Length: 151
Length: 435
Ligand SMILES: Cc1ncc(COP(=O)(O)O)c(C=O)c1O
Image 1 (tube, rainbow over the protein chains, first blue to last red):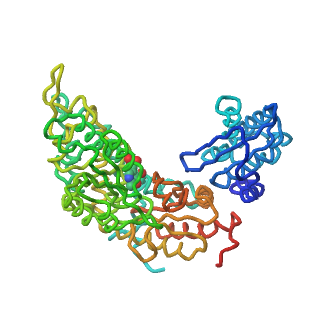
Image 2: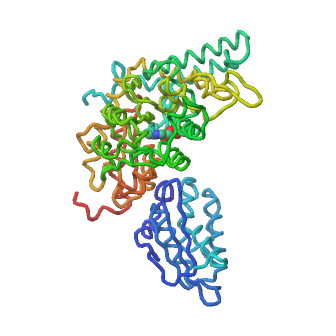
Image 3: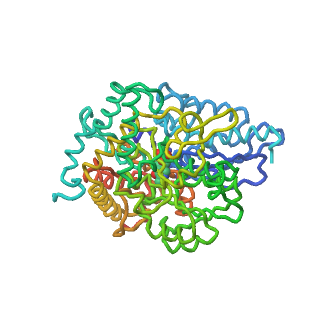
């Protein structure tokens, strides 16, 4: 797939409208607000952990931005809801590596699931930040949940 | 097809003008992308590029430092360029100060006033000092370059910012300004042409209003000097700022205009070599304007090339440039108004505007719009255009802007409209709009 269709795969267009996990979250342990100053897009990620703090019981977000950033947040929710915190962090790192690939290589579909649709974004340097917005917010929220910043 | 102002600039056709610009003649086959981002930065004609190279190859030497013939020639070129640019904007030779860009020029004023507040510059500078009872009036539509420096100045001096609010189109009027200006107003700062809405500010009325209340006027002329005739002296503004890179000139050079009497009194924000008359280990006395502000080695090749840009624009005629760009804007507005779900920001169809048009597309973020247009070979600016308060007032995070200069064709205007018409279909948000 080339050009625009490679960037805006149907999965991305669908998620940008369906927006899984969009909304407030009660009893969140941590939240983080992330801003992309070049376009003004912003997003707040909230997480609720299980009592052992090892698993993400619930994740939700609120924000506004382009279709790439909104779809990325929606896919994120599908992927990390109910996973171990460490697995979510590893996935965030894997996602980051894919977006830094400039379109090279074959991302691991097994691990990335629907997030593999964002491989095409890696060819558009100006849009990588859009796709990363929610994942960076998730990483920061997790870091906060492990520090004094927990809610 | 009828020949219109959108295809010509005065006596020259746009096709002919484009031959002067290497950026438009060096394409490797295929249709060259439509460059509709001149309000951000403009392309440069060969004459400007050549002037810079010519200076660097044949005349490069320090200015105002030393006694050699080479320094003499370099200094003459540097000061002649100042005179050329001054004449272009209706200023005296001493009223044009070289800065890095317009942002830098505005900071020169705000930092100078802060210095006056700190007691620097003595009795002459005391007239600028601000206090808690003083207000700085500026519009909600300002570029961050004409907002944040004033915020900082207010924080340093205790003065307050008093906004002139904009309406749902991002517009404001002289009546809105009159409601904000009072006896407490010391400074009124606004853009002659908004970089987002293309609104043409009522400059004469604003100057009259401000002066009647004893306030100084700073005009952000970034989007006016490159595109229309400007005469700061006749306008009566006290300070003004513009950038070379938006007027077919180089990066790294801008201008602070100020009435000579004010510039001579304003403390220099940056100090050092070349700004002084007498220096002791404890004190320094400064030259009159403009040199009191030009600290350190100056960007001479850029200055020389900026004068060439001014000559190039003059040869075409600024009245003609303005007419050409108005025709571009009219064509774009007319085309966009017919697209369902696309909203025109700023003056509505039929109302006067400068040669730029910003739009919001219902249901599609500006970044996605820009990406789609880019793929269609149309280069535009997307984002908040360094005007977040304005976008907040519009209820939009970001907009998509098409802007013109002398080299912009009617066909490029049409390509923008055509591509824009396909955006909502591509992103699947057409439903709910009655076409
Ligand atoms: C209205 C206006 N003011 C100020 C600026 C700042 O110009 P510069 O970045 O060249 O200093 C710009 C350009 O971006 C502008 O359009």
